[in-house]
Length: 103
Image: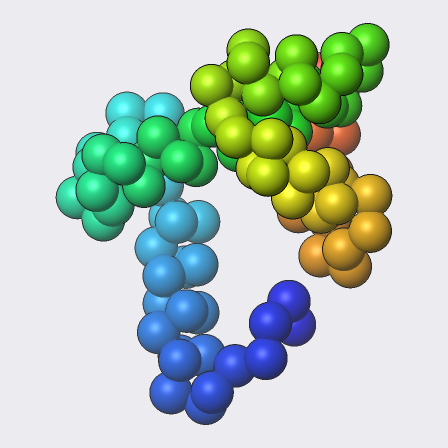
């Protein structure tokens, strides 16, 4: 399990994860996130994802990545730490998965 859950939170989180897994198209994801999140939360998710993609591509300094992604240097360092050190490896899982061609 990625995080320590309080038992009641685990059920709500599981229900949320199941809801996300039920989405089938980019449009469905967009509609669900528009209802679930504020515009600033979606921007923050997109910013972190852009930072992860730029870090994974390599060849740029943290400062360049921060500027290109319109992110703070703190965000770049945090995402880099999650890519390198954290046990969840969620960024890595998705980055590797989208690189693979679909069959």
